[in-house]
Image 1 (tube, one colour):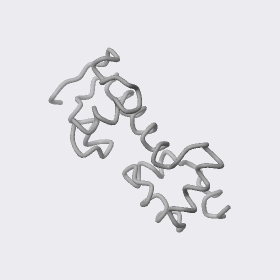
Image 2 (cartoon, rainbow, N blue to C red):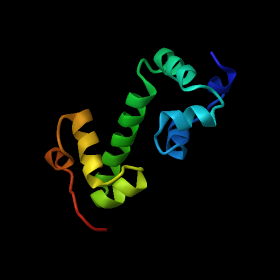
Image 3 (cartoon, rainbow, N blue to C red):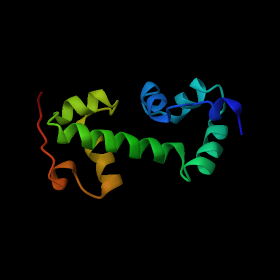
Length: 108
């Protein structure tokens, strides 16, 4: 495996810096996307795309629980819009954020 990848101390921080885009994460690590995919398969037993989706939705869940609006969360976590946030949330959890008992507001 690439030495660049084994030196990463915080994958969460790197993912946030890359706006949760695996191809940007690979670029920041100076490796190909395929190398990153192999590393993630060995290290996390999932693809970088699935791993970043889980991370982003978990962060979204935390922010929503703190009372952030869905619009603010979408902006903070680089979702294209609040609908994208809800769609990704449903993909991961099988429920919309409001169905998990989290408050959803349209404004800050």
